Length: 458
Image 1: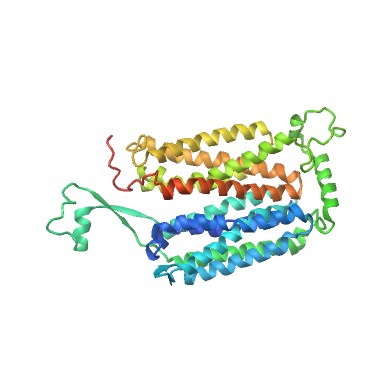
Image 2 (image 1 turned 180 degrees about the horizontal axis):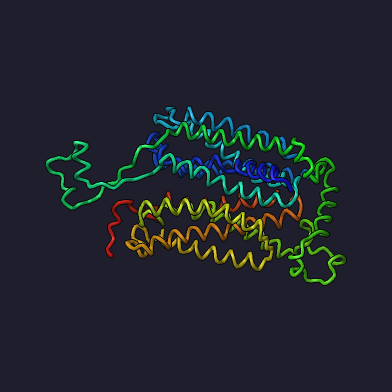
């Protein structure tokens, strides 16, 4: 192992979802400047699901033309597209176009769709590419993928996105010269939320995202061409030798399984046992493979779509500080889980199932608080604030660990297994988003909490 290769794998992983994660954290600054307003998150959800045409194409190519698609040209193309799209976004995100008598942010929506194609396609190309390196670098890649959400969140905090100061409505009205003769808001002592101006513009933020994509592209170039990394590429001719060599490589992976996997093997004779399924190396039976992919889809549906769609409803009733703290701690928990998996790669399917149940339990508490918004449990207490922050942190920590371990397991099953891993990740995220979109945006089942006035009795 070399430190350089680990750093490059981490930087490469950071480019996977940094663009779309950056768009989400920048919404409070973008929304007031565009005609779509707060309908933009709904549009983004739809655009991201439409962008799954990229993963679908790659998956079908691997299914019907196995061994014919080399991920490297695809990765060069999508990362280059990400660099250009984020750069253009910095200059055209406020531009509007008149369509059918209405004004729309067409450049913003088109560029967001292109960035969604980049990030969604990364799920089915970045992971298979990591097969060219040793298995120890896959966990480092997942650390980088987790950091792709943490870095934009930290930059947005420095930028001051969504920072609210609560002021007495009478004082605010007098300061702005808007308090009329018939105004009574000050008599009740109501607080008014005032969003503070950002420390730097959205244009600077998007240029930063473009720089992050350039870093990802540079890391990918070095992973392919740096001499020090070349010594780590144990499968340099993996793709050029076709499917036959892939099967041979999978058999080699089976014969070198680590010691902690032995308790999961039902037969005492490892070397003579028959293949338990046609998937990968045949190490796992059909029901076990189904269990792995169902858990993978479920975990990604929760972490990528279902719970993020109600984060503001679950946190804002406890105050703006609770919201930002929960979002930050959740972003930190993701790479922390990857670090834990790096040193404790426990591949037990029983443990995966238990952690999934525990993480789902934390998610259930978060969903319940969102459903009770704007008056959730313990809304006026410090303990309620602490519980929602801890719930978000442990929810992301446990399920992120599950995702990494499943990735490590599927890595041992070969290149095709990692392709299907990325496809199932996108499928789970899509199903989660499609299930939450009507509940949140159409039927309005969740009610927002005011960061300054919760209007609930103690």
